[in-house]
Amino acid sequence: MSATDSLNAIDARILGCLLEKEITLPDYYPLTLNALTAACNQTTNRDPILNLEENQVRRALESLKTRGWVFEISIVGARVSKYRHNLKAKLPGLERPSTSLLCVLLLRGHQTLGELRQRTERLQTFPDLASVEAELLKLITYSEGPLVACLPAGPGRRVAQYAQLLTGEPESGLAPKEVLQLNTPPESPASSPSAYPGHSLLAGLPQVDEAEIARLVAAGYPSQVGLSAPIYPAAAPTAPLTPPPPSEDQLWRQRMEMELEILKAQLTRLKVRLGIED
Image (cartoon, rainbow, N blue to C red):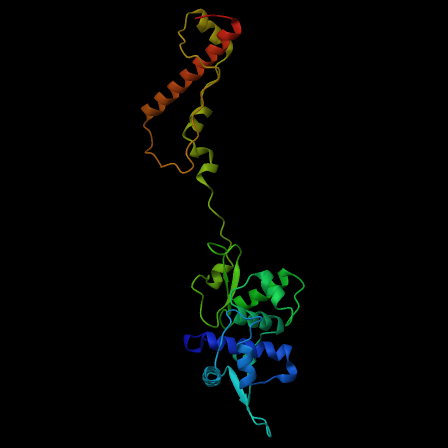
């Protein structure tokens, strides 16, 4: 869709009304200027609700006629002219399901899959959400350029919505190629064992058996730590700052201090079990 052929808000409302009334009121279609103005200002099935004057609708129709979106029909013996859309020539290849979705998007703005399925019932019945999504995909991948874009869930939107592109790409929309990409969220640093500084150190500690501890106690190994359980490193904060890598000496010192604390705690438990007093 070229910039010179894009629609403004009034153009979109007129085109949407002509598409809608062709299906819901075939006996009264094409529409007179008066009937079309009333359809544009309708308070049901419209968002936003407009209050257009006939002169505004007439000027918009003249512009649409010049660009080939609308035809004016003069019937012999009729007092007024009537108007019909020319969507089949402007956007060839669109079938009734796709046209119905485009119509509702023109009349009611951004909508979810569920809303589109419910609001197109008067125009076209979709058996399930998957069928709605399949038709939207045809509009997104339309051969002459995308007619619909997907607006992903985010701030202000709990679920993804769809918007027509005949009035230009929405500010918060995605390019059609991006809609079809599945973005896997990056793994949280906290979910990886390497995010905890003490993990790799603990994994490499030697096992200390109680026989060796008893020998150390008998030899008078000093113990001044009154702990009843091993000391574990505190959990890292949820969003830790990345510290500079420790040197080999710092790693060796940390390892020795940790081994000593674990050994002291185990000695204390063994003394309690054997009834040995300091």
